[in-house]
Length: 112
Length: 113
Image (cartoon, rainbow over all chains, first blue to last red; front, side, top):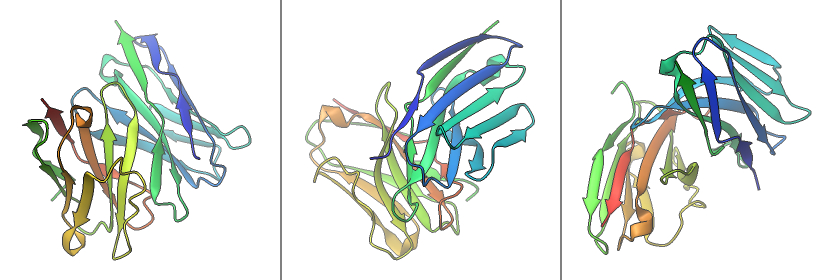
């Protein structure tokens, strides 16, 4: 079945760049996503990338997609304490693209 | 409404009782998803509704779990004879057909004591 993997923890210093990595298995995924979950809150869609793109940039966020290796990354430039959260990678799976498959989430801790 | 609304935000129930969790999706969204997030775990898919099609129930963990969506809008997730392992945050999401952007509610934190 479909599977999405992420490292579980990442710590960075405030002002540094954060890179969160994700690997997925479904080569037919059309969209790949990054969601952010702050403590006690629901999931917030950060950004997504279509599978025919290699890169997408949105302010401090850069998404890189290596479709050959099924590898997705999220880079956060100038990381701030407010970026501390859990970041979930997700792909669309299922016969009709109806099911999001999420990774376990990467807990990002930003140290002052 | 402006976003996906879930109620209640918190629910404490006794083992063996039935609970109903409600999700009010974004107006116009035809797709609705239920997920479960257990403490320290990732997201587990439960069920998916799309328009008038039969729902995809492949993620429901047991026959104690059921969900319905009335009038193509509000959805209710029902858990019968709750068990302690049902304790989790239950998240609902909605999207337009195709699900390319899914928006999540704040979740219902269920605690079974």
